[in-house]
Image (cartoon, rainbow, N blue to C red):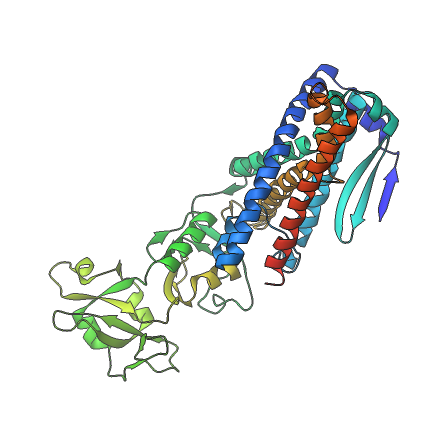
Length: 445
C-alpha cells in the first residue's frame, strides 16, 4: 500500500533553497560518503556471508552475536514487546532518507513531484517522486549528490542518535541521577526473581556477589562473569559449620555433581568444602544463614582471619547453575539459584534513578531503547541502500559513478552499462545470499 501527496512540496522547496552554498557542501560530503559506503557495504556483506557460512559449518551459536548485520524477523529474534520501537525507527529512518533525496534534488534543480509513505507486507517506508527527465539531463556528479543523499542522511541520523544516547545522562541530569546502581523497572511474571524475597519494581541493585553494580552495563557484565567462572564460595567458621550442618545422604546427580540435601528443601543447599584431611566433604546447610554477612572466597586461605578456624564452603550445584547473592538495600538480600542468563532475560533495569517520586522510571528506558533502534536501523538502511543491487540506491549510485569515472576509459556507453550490469548482478546475488542464509539461520535452524 502506498500514499502520495503534494502537501509537503512547499516545505521541501523551502529546505532545498535554504543556504545554497551550505547545501552544496553538505551534499558534496554526502556524495563522497555514499561512494565510500557503496564499496564498504560490499566488503561488509562479504564478511557477514563468510561469518554465516562459518557458523553453519562449525555450528557455533555464539558466532551469530558477532555479525554486524542480522536478518530481523518480528516475533522470532525480535520480541513482540519491541515492535513499536522497531517500526517507528524504520519509518523515521525511511522519512529522513527520502528527505535527503528530495532536498538534494531541489538543490540540483530537479523537479519535485511529491512525497509518500508505503507499507510493504508489514514494513513501513517512504519515497519521493522526482521528474525523471530532469534527472537524466543533469551531470553524473549532480546525480551522485542526489542518489547519495539518502544514505548520507541515514548515517547522520545514526550519529545524532548515538550522540543523544551518549549525552543522555547529562540531558536528564536535572531529573535523574546515575552511577548508584541498576533500578528494577520490570520483573516478568515467570521470572525466578519474582517472589516475596525477590526483586520488585523500584528496587536498586548494588551488588551481585562481590561484583559492584553501578549501571545496567555492570549488571550484564557481572552476570556474564558469574556465568563463565566457577561458583564462588562463602567463608564460614568451623564452629558455625558444625552447628548448622546435619547428617545427610550424599549421592551423585546424572551430570556428576553431588547432592546432599533433600529435594524437597526450599531453604537448604548442599555445600562442599575441604580440610587438611579430606578434600571432598559435603554438608547440607541453610543457605541464607551461611551466605548472609559472609564474604566470598575461592579457597580456605581467603577465610583465615584472627586465627579463627574457617572454611570456604561452595554450593554443590548442577552444571551452569549458580547461587547468586543480589544486594538491593534496604531490603534483605535475594538469593537466586539458577542459570545467570535467566535472571538477565526476565528482569528489566535502568541506570537512571528519578530524583522525585512523581518522575517515571520508564521514560529514560524508552528514550534509550529508541535511540539504540534508530542507530541500528538507520545504519542498516544506509548500508543496505548503498549496496550495488537492482532497485536500491546503490544501482543509481553505481551507474552515475561509472559515468563520472569511466567515460574517458570506456568510450562506448553500451560497454559501461554492461560493466555496471555485471557489478549489479554480483551485488544483488551477494545481498540475496545474505538475506536467504540469514533467514534460514533465524527461522529454519
